Image 1 (cartoon, rainbow, N blue to C red):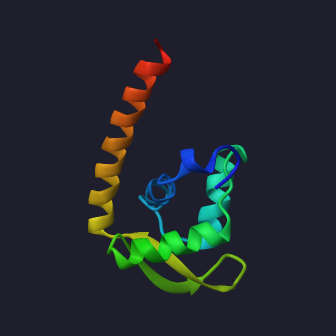
Image 2 (image 1 turned 90 degrees about the horizontal axis):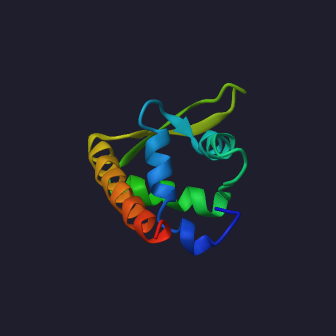
Image 3 (image 1 turned 135 degrees about the vertical axis):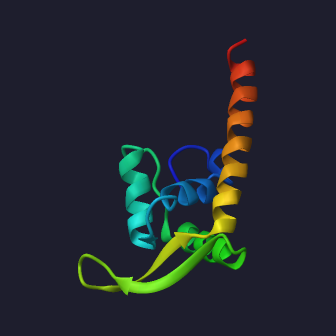
Amino acid sequence: MSPGNPERLHGTLELLVMKLLERDAMNGYAIGRRIQELTDAQLTVEEGSLYPALYRMQRRGWLKAEWGTTENNRRAKFYRLTRAGRSQLERERSEWKDFETAVGKILGS
């Protein structure tokens, strides 16, 4: 992901992907494009980061992939959140809120 400090963004990609897949299945290209759109291009995800994250989450049982057809009539893997992925999303969302609160206390002082 870019721009900014890559270390700051380390570990957030999986959370962002799971949040996007919370409602609908999406292919990798659409996930990357949606992250860019929702952040007004403040965040972009390179394929070299996105696809390894998708495969890692799939191996952990958080995502399931199925072949489908895109709106451009191309064959692509569509990823969806599993029950285990939904549980993981809730854990990570809670951890993120705690982290945000802790950092806010320091920055606000």
